[in-house]
Length: 198
Image (cartoon, rainbow, N blue to C red; front, side, top):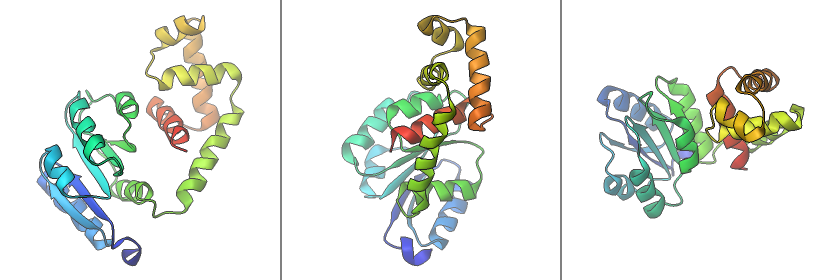
């Protein structure tokens, strides 16, 4: 692994110094170059000239921060970590981040996400193709409901747009989760997000 990633630089912004020290050590052990930052200053993050940016966000909105990063580091994938329940993961998807996690997370999971974002795992494209295939099990109405939910609509809003009751939306949501083998609504958003990136 180290030989495969030794030319990749990670900018890791994390206010928790102990966690930052841990993740920096794990990534360095895997062969990455890592700049650890305890703040979210766009200028400092961009100055790292990183191949991948990992941000822990503790409040929302973060539109200005992300706009700065997209403008000055357009080629760098961004992995956003939501440290607060007030951070809307759907909004992060809409903002254009490459991937996202909610705290607390498994360190191995984040390392795997970084590897995927930097294109070092060949199976990433295969995983995306498999994700696309899973949507073929949905009915036309379930596709419509999923699109509304993934855009951030509530059951009431989705029902109003589709001409069905909120209760019917919830029934469709449950069936979609069962068919796609996911338990949480945020995982439905992730599936749609992965497909849109392909």
